[in-house]
Length: 259
Image 1 (tube, helix red, strand yellow):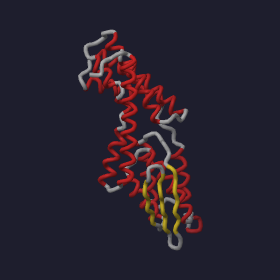
Image 2: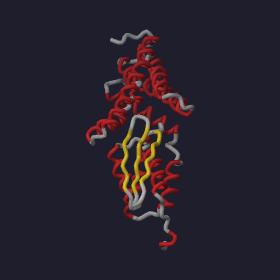
Image 3: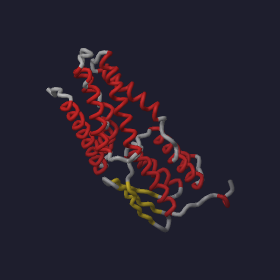
Image 4: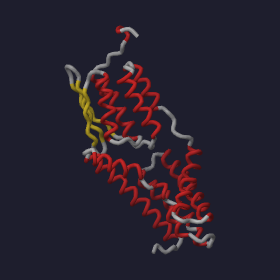
């Protein structure tokens, strides 16, 4: 590629690129330190500097070039957690820094990454159900409890996928899904099917535990991104309270004692 054909972006174009890049990386479950390193890497590949701060609902980004500075505020979007997308976005930053990937090619690559379809929903449904049944066994559940947890998780996660496709609020989604799973898992106790009914009920909602937000919150706190850490922690706490509310409602409906 000759110098005449190299795509030389303006500061505004780099700012728009990094805004979408940051939203996709944050929404996919990346920590702030990864975002910081990747975005600095991309900006420096274009002979610019970038700094950002993450507020509860927005990302505040500033890109500085040789003779201009652009500040933008972009809204955070709720996206499915995807380690595959995080890996692709990180790879793109290294391609721009080490292989000097042209900015126009990088923009098209970012668009492809954004449009990358997620995992097969039916495969994901089965794998999550198997994983939750394995948790049941890990906590001492018998085979009957594992089968019941598999069915309860399958139904609850299927409802979750349906509600997410309709963009239902994530808090209401957590309440409804935990309620469905708790009601189905209660069949172990109601019909005396196995020897560990309490484990079946308790582990039927573990697939809703916001483990990644909790972990990312602690990572961000260690890296002194306190606002983002607090925001992620509060989202995780609210989600935990919602799934607990659904679990308790299901147990009350099925007349199961909580203690």
